[in-house]
Length: 389
Image 1 (cartoon, rainbow, N blue to C red):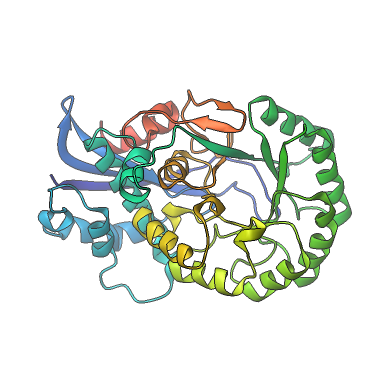
Image 2 (cartoon, rainbow, N blue to C red):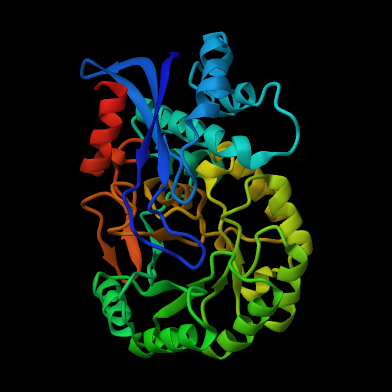
């Protein structure tokens, strides 16, 4: 068993959505195909991944450093004792000659390739990735379904509060019981009116979260914290710069409901600093939202979970960012608190399999081998063309 080629391409997201800080009109993502010498139905088994959403394509680093390192490595050096692909060895090879620090410059490219290796490994084993991860990292506790909240409430030209309410009603009608909306793109009073409008249509037991996308300085963050506190939200996400742990701790000191952050942290070390100095508390139901393909991949995510366990964080306090098949498989396999969903946005990259259904806030898992991109017809067409299959 060996990796015979790794290919990548940049694909536009083709989205006009906007949050409080930026829009996605120029956003691209890197799609990766890891091609093996294992044949099934006269075609090579290929693993696929993409670098989630919210970060631009990173093919230059892949082509210059990470792909050549894997392809130049002796094939046996990338296998475990049983002769199977070893993602941890692929990760180690890609990290050769890399200086400490500077994680985001390389973590996205490395993580995307590493997740594609996992997809190939699971397909060769003829297992869904969530099942393989459960065997290796969760004591074999295989989930049948995963709690899933829906991200929405984007800003758009001409979008009214009634339009926002209709959007959220649509998500509730689709089976979600928790919705998330953007804040920070309007004046505080207007945003609070939007939050109140959405909360007013939620049925009993449904939950609302808000996401500021790291928009606020100290004054605005504290003002929003005061304004949002009476709503009792499921969480207030990224109220400040993701690395300003001091300000986050100050916000946590005055804002009693849960906070969430972490999607823009790309290393185990940064996440450890977050839980040391950011004021987050698992007993308050605060949430950490690392995006595994953007943070060195699944092996490093497992190491981060081990670190968090030492700090008293349960896996229920983690919801991976992304809203895609990769994050869903990871949430299921590791037994995390839940997953994010972005149906109908981010072009061909958002959402789950075409046949996925949400019921009472949970998405049932398919038995497709690997991550399950084959269940997303438009996305898999892009991936298949890249791999030549």
